[in-house]
Amino acid sequence: MSIYMYGEYNHAALAEEAVSAQATIVLDGDCSGYAWLQATDTVKLIEGTVIEEAIVSTNEYSSGDDETTITFTSNLSHTFSTDGEVIGFAHPIMKVDGFLEGNAVDTSFSVGVVEPSEVRSYKASTPWGTLLSSGTDYSYNAGLDEIELTYTPTVGETVVAMGSGEWLLNSDYLAVGLNTLVERDIYIFADSDYDCLYIGMSEWISGDVNADWFSLGKEVSEDTWEWYHYQTICNINTGSIANLKIRFNLINSEAEVHNYYNVPILIGHLQMPVD
Image (cartoon, rainbow, N blue to C red):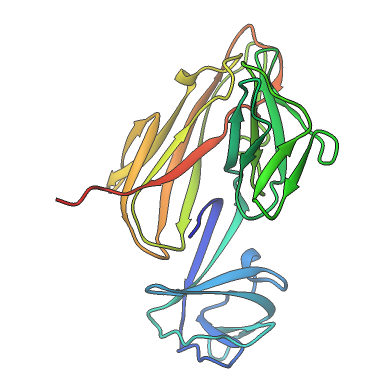
């Protein structure tokens, strides 16, 4: 069971049934120029709770039929009716795989089943985080799904392991005199059923950035958004895609220029009680 976050979401409906043991699908209109449907792109076919990943091989438009045929590198394992669709995500967003709050005793902590892409140490003196080196500062124990540090973090240090993808605020900086309001979409995809998902943002170490500069938006009715420092989305079904917005101010007249490496997005699932 996994929850994924992306900065871009695209989709197209199937024009014809996509048949198991075949490697093609047909879409209405000219989709040949779609950036997310080019050779080597990975897409997902979804219908109900059935999800299948496929890698694009070719993309050919027929003006006579006004249809685009997508050929994959291998045959499909499932059949999808015209109620299904093909979706493509881009710009996967890093999320926290695990962390350790220093206590002068513990030297390891649990992470996911894949080796983290980055491990960082956060302290008051470096609130944006210091990148740790694999093999020197830590190692990944695949048998235990743990990060094992070569030193003992003390109180006041937090070590964080991040999954693959891009930093949430990858190219945004805090600079002297800067005052900019930024709003950005994120898309959350679940491959299992969940009662509720919790999404929030946090700092590991209090520093130049504080918690009053960001908010998360959820659409509660058409074109009406509610903004809070965290959001809860409930009744998530397999294949669901939820759209949130992130709004943040880049304001701090006294700050040095730092990338926002100390501001991750946190996501988890909640199981609601049954009466």
